[in-house]
Every structure is written in structure tokens, then in C-alpha cells.
Image (tube, rainbow, N blue to C red; front, side):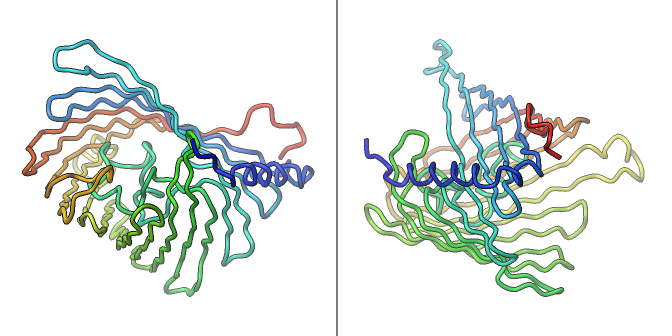
Length: 346
């Protein structure tokens, strides 16, 4: 196994930051958040049960440093063959482990392991307590190779801020890592987004250069729009040498007022349509092996105390085979201060 030579540097950097400002570090209490979920799916007749725990730790250090970490602990229970016995597997993944330095209102420097910032799904919609549908988009692997996380350095912030609009940016470089739970590909990428507050609209574009094996370019565009307080629209397009595609998703949260408002206020219907077009064969690219279309319909029901029940049905159409996809999941979102924090903390 190839050792990541930068890992000791990142670990030392974070430990140094944690010990650099002991008096200031107690001014803000570290937070533990995340979600626990139980996911059931039935894809093409194959049923599976997945318990998932995704804790998130946020430790502020003074006014400029922040340590962020998240892991995913996942189980998978399914039959190995139709009619065969159920088998159980466990997986542990470190999603990110990063040190943020807020240089000023225009620049934040990030070092360590972070979510690869290509388009918006991976960073903003990926966690189980955020995304509306259990299955990710068909084009998700484009721009997020090899694991959805990168090991290296990232710069991000606001390039221009005006009352009418805001221009944000992200640029990163990742090293190749084969360290267990810290795998990443060698790549460079950028993302630029334009946010218009009055319209509650953000549009942007992403680019990534994959710098190992055969060097390849991937690019994409995205849209995030809240036309009203109860309607949300998300969409992405992504292109790589292996293929290209898009997805568009809409969700509506019913109002408490009006006929049946009290009964419907916690319900959110969702619909997503997507297509993928294969351009060239790919080995291990995690993309569909043939042109594929899919439409999903789902419902979220929001219980008190941050509990959500989600169910969905999807129809998968491809020259390699059609299938029906059913999902049902229950998630609980938690947030609390770190236990046993010193009494002097505020």
C-alpha cells in the first residue's frame, strides 16, 4: 500500500492549531452533529437494509481557525444470491477531516481531507439528512473521482460581493492517496458560482483535471433556485470523456394554511428526472455502462424533533436492462455541544 506522505503534515498542522490558542479555544463550545438512519431499498428485485451513522464534529479555535470532521459508519444486509442467506457487511469512511483558516471575508484556506467541490451535490446535498432521494444522481461520479473526497489544499471564498449579486469561488489540489479510509485521486479543480439574493438563485460552473493514469478533463454547470419559500429546484449537468448527462429535481413543501393545511404541512413531494449518455468505455468509473434514463417520485414526511420519513419509487430505463427501484428510509438529525467541555467554556 502506498503511503500518503502528506498525512503526518496534516495531522501535525491540526494538532498545532488545537494547542495554539488554549484560552481562545474555550470561548466557543465544539459541536457534535450529524444523523442516524435506517435505509431500505429494493433495486431490480434485490432488497437491502442499511443502517447508517454519520457524526460531524466542529471545533472552533479562536476567531480564525476551525476543525471539521465527518465519518460514515454503514452496515449493509442483503442476500448474496436470490433465495440465499442474508449476509452482513460493515463499512467505515472518513468523509472529511480538515483545518480551516479564515484569512479574511474573501478567503478561507482549507488543508486536509475535504469533500471534492465539483458542482453542488457532493458538498451540499450528499448527507442523508439533506438529500431528498436515497439514490444519488447517475452523473455523480463525474468530477468526484475517486471517492468523493480529496486530500490536499483548497481555497474558497467570495471574490466579489454586491447588494444585488455575489460571486463565490473554490479552487483545490488533491494528492494521490491509497491510505485506508483516506483514499483520494490526484486532481486539480475549480468552481465559480453567481448568487442573486433577491431571486434566491445560484448558477455556477465546475472544472476538474484528473492527474493520474490517463489525464482527463471534466466540467459541469449547476443551478439552485428557490422561486418561493416552499418550492426548491436543483439541477446539474456534467461531462467527462466517458459520458455526459444531467439531472433536475423539484420539491414542494405544503403550506399550513388553506384546505387540509394542518394535515399536509409536514409533507414534501419530490420529483427527479435524469439522463446519462455513454461516450466511451470506462473501467471503474462507476457510471452506467449504457445510455440510461431514470425518473424518481418521492415523499418526505417531517416529524417533530428532527425525524424524517422518506419513501420513493424510481423507474430505470437502459439498453442493459430496465428496473423498478423502491426506497424507504428513516433519519434522525442530531445536534448537541461536546460533552465534558471545560466549565470555563461559554
